[in-house]
Length: 424
Image 1: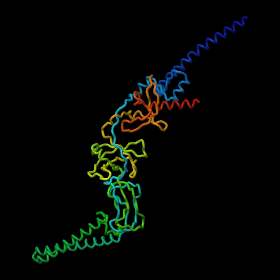
Image 2 (image 1 turned 60 degrees about the vertical axis):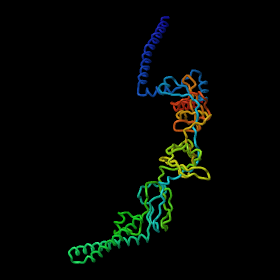
Image 3 (image 1 turned 45 degrees about the vertical axis):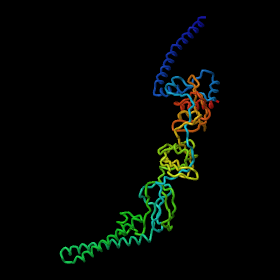
Image 4 (image 1 turned 180 degrees about the horizontal axis):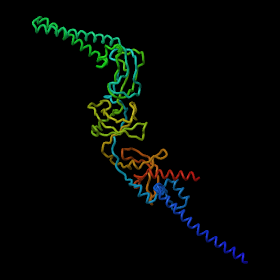
């Protein structure tokens, strides 16, 4: 009996002691956890906390909302992200002139390069697609005619030196009354004739494409006096090349085409009834099938003064900025010119481009449905400008759509659905 009481007392003591030691231990663990949460990753955890979509219903209901494309966020998330919305209202669409045409080279910035005299190709320095600078050598040709021209130049240069010395001598003698005036004038005439022949021979070499440095080195033993270069007239891109080593080329041949692709042209046919709606400098939107979601800006730079009597249209030139090299000469394009007027009796839904998000091959927007909840809706877009886009299907008047923060909502929806798929 005594032993039994002793055992009971011992058990009670151990139980109390266990509670005494475990309580401080748990307190220390909790404190350590709090300290850790105050560390450098606290901000990241706050972001995760904000991203988490709270649910006020059971888990199954949340999964159904994910499939319906509904995203819920907290008020804290709403304030931190600065989500902005606007109501969809119908407006009168602008009137557009739409036409198709072919993209062309800028005719003022394209040059066909060929030899001025017959010659055989002995070296090629440029290839298709190369970016070349003004004055850069594209190829070298060897020409018998150039050899003859160089010989004429060297002979005329020597003759000029001789005739100049003779004239200076006769002029000195005439001033000293040693020789007659007639002898001095004859020497002067011969000198002027030699000078004219030399200048003509030098100009002929320039026509072959030789510059001053080339001409000054004609007497060099290592310099070929029968070869001449083909030079690029300006900086641009080699877009055509029609020559090979050893080929004999004539002056009519177009061996290279160099073009400035930074600015291209598109020539539009505008009907007579629309002429009062266009002006020089007016903006034009151009699209091509290769990039259906991109509009390329252009401006009207020329309106023809002549009307085609057969089609009753006028040629209008539009200059297109092509610094990114997406547009290619020869592409068919569609051009739209906003005339500034509104189509009477027409209404359409226009929303900011910032509301549109690309999602699984389509376009979507997020519509506010209350309580910091947003439903994703697929839409079909129509005409688009730099800031606004026409909505053909998917929205109705009065819908409140997200214009700032839509990308975040899309990301959260994708994460929620991904997590749901992994859970299953």
